[in-house]
Length: 146
Image 1 (cartoon, rainbow, N blue to C red):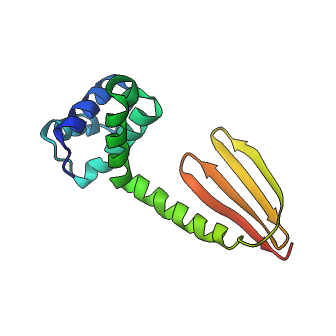
Image 2 (cartoon, rainbow, N blue to C red):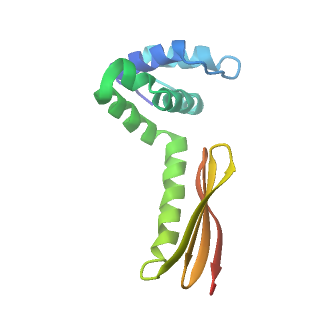
């Protein structure tokens, strides 16, 4: 993956200041890839972790502003973890589309564990549970004829 100079400098700065741990050699390889602007496929997972933490912590927006934050978000959407999450959300949207026209009778959100929540939707025809957590969203159960 090739990165423009603007993003390389932003992410190099983030790599130096954010408290992230990597497997042996990954930090150095990631730093070298950010310096040159070319990252191998093997570095996409560590890059995704760096980009995610840069966005979650507010580091990018605070130091570089909303325009750069938007560029980093766009980069994030190109990385494998984001593409996997987009696929999960596409499947979830398909499941939710099946609820159109049904009368919503009950909705509940409950805590499963830190950063993980369970949304229960009950209609006149079904009950479904969706778990939202750090790894994305997943349809946990679907009961028909409730």
